Length: 559
Ligand SMILES: [Zn+2]
Image 1 (cartoon, rainbow, N blue to C red):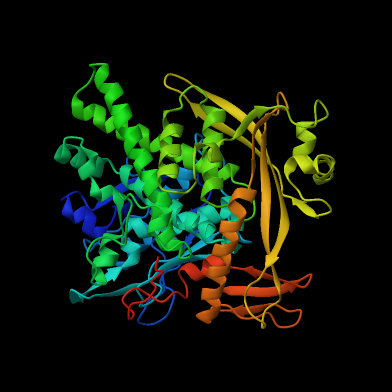
Image 2: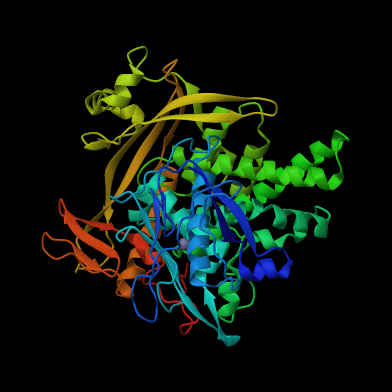
């Protein structure tokens, strides 16, 4: 079943600055269940009336009839009417899902990281300058606050496509790479932030009116296209800041940011991906102009759409290849490069751009650090039945155990083989496309290092490492193999983990584990396993309990 949904565009302030239409219609497609709310099989709006605290009736679903499309029509002109916010948040979450799940990206539906089928979306969660995804409550929560420039005006975070798309992406990414949520390596949490911000850019480029207006206004010169690079402008200005919450059009390197604060750190990666997008756009535009077909602006339009698609594929397939456990920027960089090399070996332009960005920004010391292994024979020779590997945990375990050194598993260490992913993706080329099936085999194990947290805590702590192998089921050859926790990068990550944990402990956001039970301080859980400290739920901290922007300065970790 398909339904038409009217959603708010980009960010109320960004959209207003360009005089574009404030809303757009998008389609929610192929859903088996569409109900009042809006509610679908995987997303449910829960709108609580802030005055009474009671759940409001859902916006009625209207079935298609004659020329009328199915959907949740809302008559109110007020763009901030509760019904409009509810429908818009629902549509925006689905828009983000569709972007990630398309056949050329993930090629499958995302499974949420929590038990339960539905992501609960609360468009008016209460008064606060915040919004977040929380795995434990299976929800996205959007708050509102009074605009400091005009206290009669409320800033609803659910009215910003940037913010709704950002939080929805946290939930989607948690479904793809759930280990990032429990990681203690700051770069893991920063990957969450960066991917969520890049998704807001891709969703904004999806808006035809925004694209058209911008290209007309700039003549296609994207160096003045800050409407795409700025995230959550209204949120930031409503708190009295100048400029957006985060600016992706930046040249920041690892040396320029606090490497232990995930939001600050995120702009290095999101900035790199934004520059790759701009380079890709420029290249595609130049190629189109060289053909002397179509007008300059038509070609710019097409180059922007195609460029955004290329970045989406690069990023989403890279995330699918990301090794389990604590993967950092360089790991994601290699995963993106491997996924792109496996699918588009003959068109290296985008990979060259990504390598240049990651080296220039000090993510890795040189090109060699980003070299990846693709298209090689596996250690199993002909001794592999791909269908059995997918279906049988025993077969998968035996295979990994027989070749554990090749996977990178330390001697005598126990390991976990994750459920295999049997995925079919569409590879899009200039003039053709093809379906490619691959099996993703992921293995995870534990590593121990000094906890560095003082006497209240155990002496050692545990973090996780892993390996992803992409296997071609027809030839049983390895399309790509990726291992994290590389010796050259381990020490830097260990240092950053210690700094992050010390900061959380200092701020009262981490509590020493008591006995054999688990201790929960704020969103973060600590427990003892084999005498060592295990910390989980760190991503919940990013938004739920962080000191908010404007609350007396200091470190700010909102959204
Ligand atoms: Zn976030």
